[in-house]
Image (tube, rainbow, N blue to C red; front, side, top):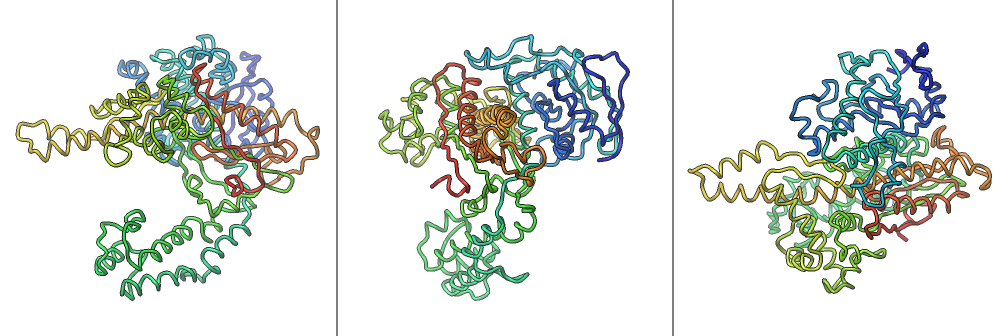
Amino acid sequence: MAGQGRVTLIDPEAPSAEAVTVPLAGFPEAVCRLEARRPRWVWSDTRSWYPRLLEAGVRVERCHDLRLCGAILEHSAATATMRKAGDHPRSAWLPAGPSEPGAAAALAAPSVIVRTPLFELDEFHAAASGGVDAVGTADTAVEPGAGTVDRADDAVVGSSAVRVEAIIAEHDRQLALVAGSTEPNALRLLLAAESAGALIGVELHAAGLPWDRAAHERVLEAELGPKPKAGWKPARMEELAAQVRTALDAASVNLDSQVDLLKALRRAGIHVDSTSRWELREQEHPAIEPLLAYKKLARLLSANGWAWLDEWIAGGRFRPDYVPGGTATGRWATAGGGALQLPKNVRSAVVADPGWTLVVADAAQLEPRVLAGMARDEAMAAAGRGLDFYRGIVDAGVVETREQAKYAILGAMYGATTGESGRLVPRLARAYPRAMALVDRAAAEGERGGVVSTLLGRSSPLPPSEWHATQSRASQPEASPADERRARSVAREWGRFTRNFVVQGSAAEWALCWMAALRTRLATIAAAGGEAAGPIIPAPASGPVFERAPHLVYFLHDEIIVHTPRALADEVAAAVEEAAMGAGRLLFGDFPVEFPLDLAVVDSYALADA
């Protein structure tokens, strides 16, 4: 819809004055003028509005994303009572599946400006000494209908028109749900963080991850051989395939067909149930080693080969489509490009522009630290003092080796009852009873078919209808022992999901708060730095907003990369660490849980682990 329609604005300082209507092409200029007053933009979907602003060189400080926030409120247990009362029905124009990639990519509903700094992350810090329960005050919220809003013309959503009154009504509905919820302060922080994440997701795409195509091609040639002709396999893969076929005595087996390959393996006396790498590694046969090597190269070719380069790398940038809130736990997803699965052997292609460098930071063992903070388990938090949480567990005498500590923690968070993890979990329960009780309660609630919530109030989905049908069959008088075993099995499986949900989802909230705070700090550094820090070589491929300013370029659950002018690198690195500490204080107050970072300032992503 670019270039079509118009937007009518009301001056926040004079809401009764005559409205000003600008064409959609003039929207960026209008936003730029109003940004000096630090408004909060409330719109249907950040992915619909924000890209056109960034293209025009306009950065927005804050927003309220109605789509993402509506999805949280619609499923949060904290708003369940109000929703059941029926006074706040979900708006019909909101997409039914807001977490699905691309579910609302075409939305272009009217924008709304709220002048009062609603849900401002910075304002939560003043009350954060007591953790989430002390976050915010009633004064930070705008009551439904209050504030100053921009009026806009109708916009087409799919094939139906949405009037501005519906947009404003949805905003008011969300404010009312938050105000009447059982956890208003936590939800306010979650919606602020989620909306900041929406801005960051668009900015990551706009700026792009610096990518050296020549370096990537050198990796491919070293691993696969020269680029093959269309329809042919790379030379190295053909060599390995020939070795496998010879070892299996199967000259025509298609190694890319799981069915064909499984038959050939069994004919050769290799009795496996699948062609997965972990199962193949347990077998002893001359075909296994070249087959595993072939599968590894096949993965590289399909996920990050020459075709991927042609599709995703342009102008020295990789621009994936991030989907904030794209999973049930709040973790991000991508709609293409595989940004969340970049293998280590292609990271050498992530290279800073001339005069720039990369600040790479990884939150060490984030999830167990979040668990310690959520449970207020002081003994577990003490084990996390320092960079290596697992080593801390060993030093506390809970287990003998670091590997055992890792197995035990993973078992605790994923509900392991057998194997090495299952054997070690009881030791954790004795050493860290508060943490283990938290995840055990979450698992028990899931096994009953209930809902659990993250620290800030994102709630898990209910089990699917098939789950309930299985439980119902097992409760019938004519139920067989097999029915009962099946019901217990699926109940435990859902319990493992809810056990992990509370930890993984809360860790995702910490990461959002980390990035949101860092984004603000980077803008401050850019505004104050400039040429005073030394000559800055522009990076035009990063776009007009970021070509001279440090900016986020990559996010992977608990890891970020900032692309920064070299002269600002030290200041940026300090900001990354300060933002991490601030996120911990914001969520857990003065509880002594630490969130240390593996941090490196490097010219290539591949050097971060060196």
